[in-house]
Length: 225
Image (cartoon, rainbow, N blue to C red; front, side, top):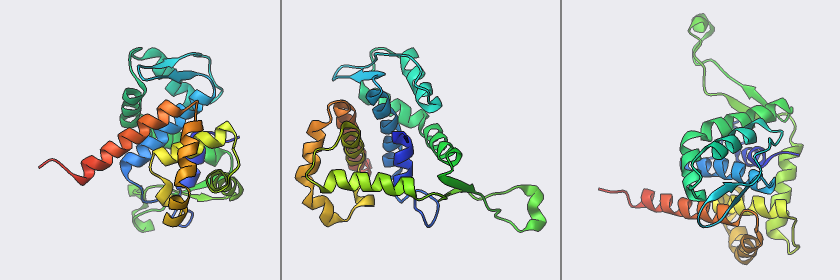
């Protein structure tokens, strides 16, 4: 089974261009950080309330990426709340989370990595490359993630806790407009609110992500002069 970081990466990759969809940098940072924290919460490794984010089980998870973040939180300041950890990890770990999720998907044979030279072969000794791009070699996992997300949002059935957590995370990060039509989102506003209230495991994580996302959007819209 794929982890939340891997599922988020698949949802955000443009299949034609091999790069991420045009979402704000802060949105990508929150999505990557939030997905790791959500996975750790679902694995019963961390818990959070209004006061602080706490490690309740420091045992390794079997996933290198999750273990790295878990150890960092275990060894970090015990008084930090979830918002402070989200900000810290967004600033310092986003690139590593993104690259490890992409690398894992390549290792699973779901994506392939391509790099192309910027200069003709005559200058090949300069080793100048474009940024790597990632293309699907197996479309099934992404299709399944997208279908599960759509089913969670567009049906009236009560989904399981993992589907609720993924939908809440995608909504909190502000990624919905990149994945669904505006009329679909508007139609399911009540449904999305219901899912937020059902997200018992990641409620504080998604609440804080939504607050940070809103704050960053407001700052971008009204920059200081």
